[in-house]
Length: 201
Image 1 (cartoon, rainbow, N blue to C red):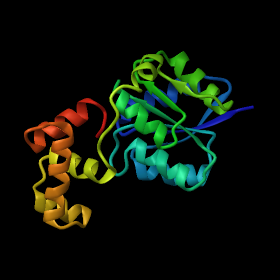
Image 2 (cartoon, helix red, strand yellow; image 1 turned 90 degrees about the horizontal axis):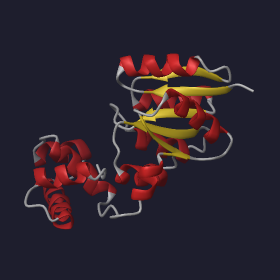
Image 3 (cartoon, one colour; image 1 turned 45 degrees about the vertical axis):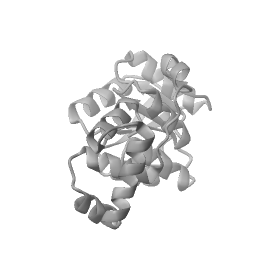
Image 4 (cartoon, helix red, strand yellow; image 1 turned 180 degrees about the horizontal axis):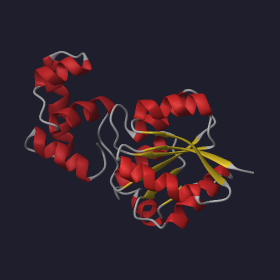
């Protein structure tokens, strides 16, 4: 039986390398590749692959948002997050979003192929050290606080954040204030940095 895989990765060199490596496996076929999250969702909807390997940070939609959308649509594809970020907060959010795997990009190619086989067989594939760390400090942010803080950390003004998220400036200020309070940070940049370091953004 051949396992079909879709790859989602915005760095084209990495995307090509992953496609080539998995293509060497007799029982794995790369059915399609996507350079952003929205394209990944479209491909999964159209191709119904067994497994989606998705980078965590991509344009349009993050890998976590893609996993959540695959789950929301009731698609049978099993999602594995592949990332450079060894942050337990990301792992917890990935599992909450419906992902069944979380691997680091510096893992050997053989481990990646085996992870595809494991999740296809109904199991999970999670970096063991991250799995041990994941149940430490819980993520205190709400989804809306996270979105506002992410944009603030990117340097957007309150008015720009309000425009992007269709909120009032006062609501944006309230979300930022709440996030800073929860994180014990003196300002929005420090709050965004702390949240990013823990994998909460």
